[in-house]
Length: 429
Image (cartoon, rainbow, N blue to C red; front, side):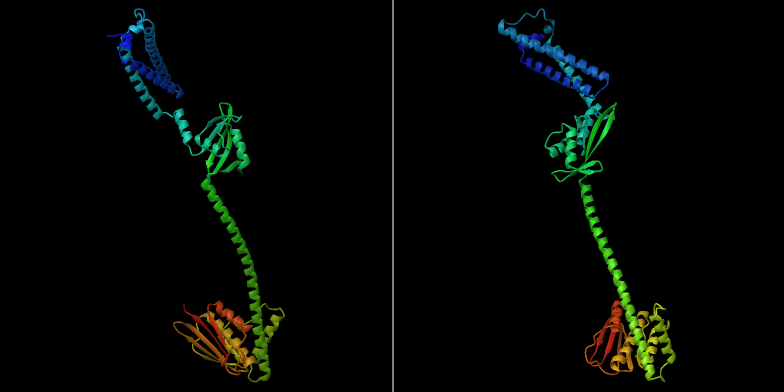
């Protein structure tokens, strides 16, 4: 079997043997480096070191023999091999060593893959930190960056235009351009993102480090801004509601005052008409009724009572009795409505029309027609006496009656020609 020297000098496969030894030595170096970096057990590190030394020695022997061979051939022919034992070893031994080395490397790489899958290594931790969506930077007290993931480096370059080399410089920039959020800093980037930066200290093995974190709060910031705008809008609505409530209160008070004045005007007018009718027709007038109404009105005017006292019986009957007390008879055609609201409105209408018939038309008869069908209730009131000479201008009692009817959901129509008539209706829908 040919020696190594003979194989290198005569065979065309000599460069392949040399390059294989070089390739194996490079891989062995990498395996040894990984074993040290990942802090594997001592047995694995020692095996990788021994393997590397053997591979290095074999590569040096083959390379030295190859160089010496070509050197001597260039000056004086093939050298004498008798004294060089390593060169006279059969080349097949070196080939077998390379094959064995390849098998061992394959086994070591498989073991390393298993180790990576079953153990949290430093490389895995670094890769995980780099893949985080948040930015992380750990630095010494003087700002020297010890650890920074890809996201923090990207944010630093985007905000400052420079690489992250000094954490203190980055934080100073954030303080000058960010919005303070209870010790944290809110930053808006050129990509329309919003990041929240925070800084705290870490104590490890008696040493203190600075940690800077960055969290993407774009969505939360937009929601907060939207809620802030809605709160401003709600405050405006609340202010308007307070103003409206204040105005409504004032309007209610004024409406109550107007209603009280109208009621007082109507009651006083009725008492005066009753008094006048009593002086003109003492024989047909209920003197006790006139005296009672007069005493009640006087008590109200003197402030002894808050409102005039009225009978609590049927309002329509009271209104007809009041009309009779001022000389107006009431002719009723139809059935009185059962609804209490319509009862009250009809009584007010009788009182108002009776008083107006005496004051303006010099009449003494009211005619009331009540019709009720599937569409609704229709009431018409007319009087005898003089017809109005001009269109009727609603004020006082008539105006108050219209407001009450329309507020209750009805409609009211006043006609002056050919005779006075007051119509109001309530539809069933």
